[in-house]
Amino acid sequence: MIKEIPKYRFQYIYREPKGGEPPAMTSESEAVRVEAFHKQLPGYHVTNLARLSNLANVFGVGDIFVKDESTRFGLQAFKVLGGSYATAHLVCNQLGVKLDDVTCDYLVSEEVKQKIGQITLTTATDGNHGRGVAWAAQQLGQNAVIYMPKGSAQARVKNIEALGATVKMTDVNYDDTVRMACQTAKENGWFVVQDTAWEGYTETPMHIMQGYMTMCVETFRRMEAVNERPTHVFVQAGVGALAGAVVGFFVNKYQENPPKFIVMEPDTAACFFKSAAEGEIRIVGGDLETSMVGLACGEPSSIAWPILRDFPCCYVTLDNYVAANAVRMLTNPLPGDPAIEAGESGACGIGLVDLLMNCDAFKDLKNDLQLGPESKLLFFNTEGVTDPVNVREIVWHGKYPSLHMV
Image (tube, rainbow, N blue to C red; front, side):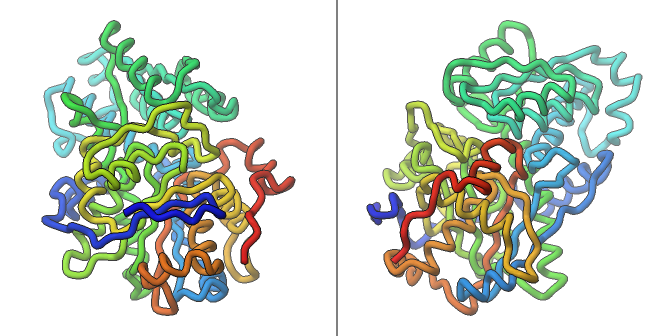
C-alpha cells in the first residue's frame, strides 16, 4: 500500500476512499452556529481567500485557492478559532447555560466573573494553539498556563506571554508535554483546552475541531461567489483536528460529489499516514523534529481519526525541503499573484503540488489524483511567520534547499 520515491524522501498512500455517512459534528448547521459565535468576537473579519491563477497556469492546473489565516484576529494563525469556541463552551458549562443562549458580551461581563470566579485554562502547544487559548483567556478575563515542548521558538513563547499567559517550557516532545499539562491540571483543578482527543476526553476537542469550521464556511462562500468549487483539497494534519474539520465540512457540503482529499504530514511525525497504512490508530514516537512544528504530533485525535480514515484518498509524508520551497514560492509570487505570508506548516501543500506537477518521478500519483487543467486546488495557509528567524533563513539563505528536479 505504501509507495516511495526515495530520491525525494517521499512516501504516499493512494486508494479509493471508504466514504460513508457525512459526520454530523461537522455539518453545515454546526458550522453556521460556530461562525455566529466568532462574528461576535472583537476583531473578527473574514480572512482572505487568495487566488494564485498565474501559479496555477505554470503548474498546469485550472486554479489555485489559498485560504490565508495569517491575519486571523491579529494572531497569525487559525488556531484561535478552535480555542475561543471551546473556551466559551467551558465557561458556559461552569455557568450552567448553553452557548447558543448567551452572547459574548455576557461571557466577559462582571456578572459572569462573580459567578464563576477566576479559572485557569491550560494546554500544550508548539505555539499557535497556545496563543489562541491565551487570547481567549485574556478576552474572558481568565488565567492561562501554556506548556510548550522542547525546541519551541522564542518568538512563539514571547507571543503567548504578551497575552498575559504563563509559559512553562518542557524538555520533552509535544505528546509528552500534553500529558504533563493534563497531569498538572488534574492536580490543580485547571481546565484543559487540548485539541487532541482520547478516551474520556472528547467534548472540548470536538468543540475545537468545530471551531475551525468558520474558515471552511468563509472559504465555501467565497468560492461560491465566483462560481467555483474545489476538486482537490490539500490539508495538513497534526493531531488531526484541522484536517478533520476541513474534510468533514466539505464532505457534508458536497455529499454527492466530494473533492479528493489529500492529507499531508511531516515525515518525522506521520501518525495518520501510519494509521491509514495499518487501518487503525497508530502512534509515532521520538523527538518528532521537523520545521513544520505545528504538525509535530505523534498521536492522532480519536475523534478526527474516523473522518480521516474514511474520506481522504491520499496520504503523504513531506520532508522539510517541501515546506521550505512552498514558503519561498508564496513569499515571492509570480507577477499578478498576491504574496502570502506563510510559515512552514501553513505553506507545505504548495510545495507538494510543485513536485506533483513538475517532476516526472511523481507522475503516477499525479495521474491517480487526476490533476490537470480542470483541477481547482484548495489549500489552507494555517499560519503566518510565527518563527521569523527560521523563515528568514529559508527565504534569504536557502535553508532546506530544493532537491534537484529531473
